[in-house]
Every structure is written in structure tokens, then in C-alpha cells.
Image (cartoon, rainbow, N blue to C red; front, side, top):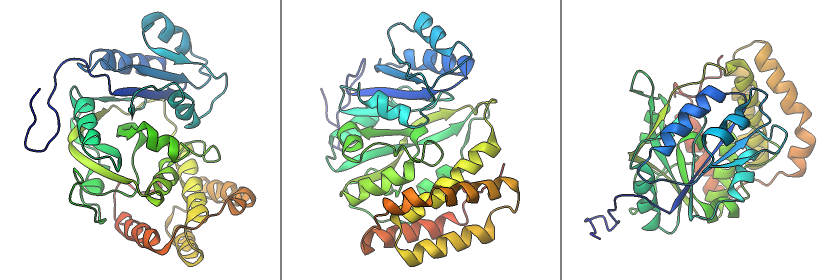
Length: 310
């Protein structure tokens, strides 16, 4: 075994440090393609699939074609909470999330584990995302690469204030300590709340340019429904964790800037309907962390990846 100048290990062949977790719902063909690509990874990671009550034969196809993978069938659509269920079965120090339309590039899981091995306070590393079949960078990559947050010198890349579940390897212990994904958010920008709580506990999140995830966007997604959920959850996160004045300013900015259409109206109606539970669980962050959240908010206003459109 050799050690490069960075102090991390260089290894080849199977790697037993990381389990891949993904959730799926009614995307059988795309999921089977992703699982076939994961099966060919040189790391040979364990894979856990949570089937969120698919009706297209997804679970049966996974059981038939990928018997070595763990298949969970909760019987209802848990959304992002399906990842929490899967992590209960993880026995490795790290868990790599991806979606049924994203997959890890060979070698990236090993490198991510090396980065986490060498940095005990690093909770997660987020990869560069390449859009297929074009092979171009996802617009969100620029936002990650140009993060306004500062961090300790030992981080492998820019410090982040959140992460992308489709392209991130997390420390299993940190994920559990942060409580996993909040059941109230279900799906759609659900990472922001967990990331905030991890930062509050003293963990760090970072972008790692050397890691790569490929994304071939599903043709079966409903962009309008995703926009409604994303905007609703942004509002809920704002009122769960931001202090009063920043929460008011953020809400006002969204009212002024989101598209004035039926989808935005539905998002605000649903967000308002959830305020009773949100206010009961409200726990604003301390000033130092609020300063970081405010910096991220300002940077994201000009990001092409943060448009509530669709």
C-alpha cells in the first residue's frame, strides 16, 4: 500500500468502505440501467434500493436481475425517507447516495472514502455532476465550485452549506447523528435541512472536484410537481431554521421573484398549511451559522441552477 503526498490511500480492486443507497418510484428501465452501471464499478459496493411503492414492476425486476443487491419494499411512497430506511441497513462507514437516473464514475467511491478517511470532521463530499448524453457540466457545479463559504485548510475543496443527495458520499455516523432526512419535507430540496443540522453539530461539508457523478435526467419526471415541492420545502426550511428577520426577508424575496403562476400559488398554499408543525419544531440557528446561510442565499440568487421554473 502506498501513500501519496495528500496522505490518503491509493488502492485498486473492491473497496468495502461504502454502500450505495438509492430510492426509486415507477422508473424501472432507468433504474435497471443505473444498477447495471453500479454493478460494474471496480469498488463492487453493496447496493441498497428502496422501492417507493412502484406499480410498474420495478421491485420484481430488481429482485430478478440483481439478486445480490438489497431490495427494500416499504409498501408506500416514502419519498426521501426511503433513504433513511436504507441507511438502517448500512454496515459500512460511508454511504453514497444517487438517484435512479444518476450513477458514480468508476473510482470515485474509493476516492471519496479516502477523503473522508483522512478528515474525521468531514461529514460529506459532493461530486462534480456531468449531464448525459451531452457530457456537459450541470449548472449547479459552478455554484458548488464558487461557494462563498470559508473553511479549514484541510477541506478537499470549497466548503458547502448543503449537498446534493444524487451526488454525495456521507459519513454514515454523521447522517445518523443529523437525524437523516426530515419526514415532514418528504422530497424536494430535503438536503438543506439535514445539511444545516450537520453544520450546527460542527461537521463540515465540501465539494470535491475529483469525484464525478453522471446524470441522465429521467423522462418520467414532472418538473412542475418538483417545483411545487422544492418551493414549499424552501419556505419550510426557512421558517424551521432561520431567525425571524432573515426568515421574513427570505419569504418576501421569494414572493417577489418566483413565477406568478398556479404552481407557485400551490407551493405557498401548501407551505402555509404546514406552518403549525413547522412553528412547533422551529429552532433557529445561532448567529455564526446564520451568517453562513445568508452568504449562501446571496450567492444563490444569481445561480442558473436555482430557478423556480418548470
